[in-house]
Image 1 (cartoon, rainbow, N blue to C red):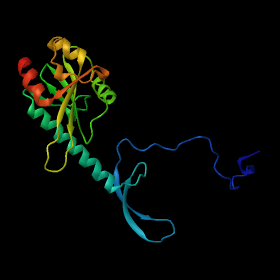
Image 2: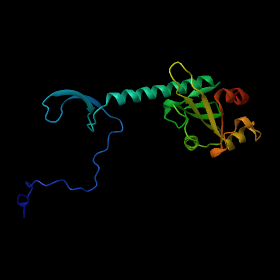
Image 3: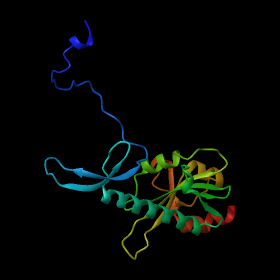
Image 4: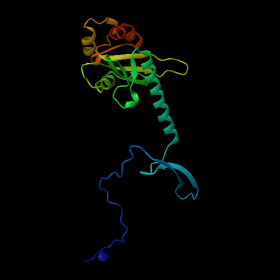
Length: 196
């Protein structure tokens, strides 16, 4: 039997084997191309990835850039408000702001406050080296012309190890997940100045 004897010209439906196809690119390489939608016979220019042929959605792209820009501004604002702090966000580290040899903070600008479990997960993503305090700063995405509240969270045990076990009652955060919360301004006034 040779290859010529095999029935390759028979049309048969694709076999469902669970294959998902090629994954989208990690980073698309956008290019413009002419596109004809179905049987419309009208050519339109669209932007798509030269590698995976994913169509670019301009609204989603704009939304992604706006959110990234908003987050970068929040990180910079927090870093500028803390004495001795540096913005580390663009380096791809699990923390966005570093306060000398004292603390590493993850900063998020969100419309609503994250759950205590999410806050604990974000703090746990920062490596526990023991030489720095790990924390999370939530910057409220308030309406236009309004500055939202800025709260900072720490793991209560780590914070007590740094500052002693006698913490003010006003700073305890309902004991959920062992977290401690206060406003960013309170933390800077009471604790950052004493350590720096």
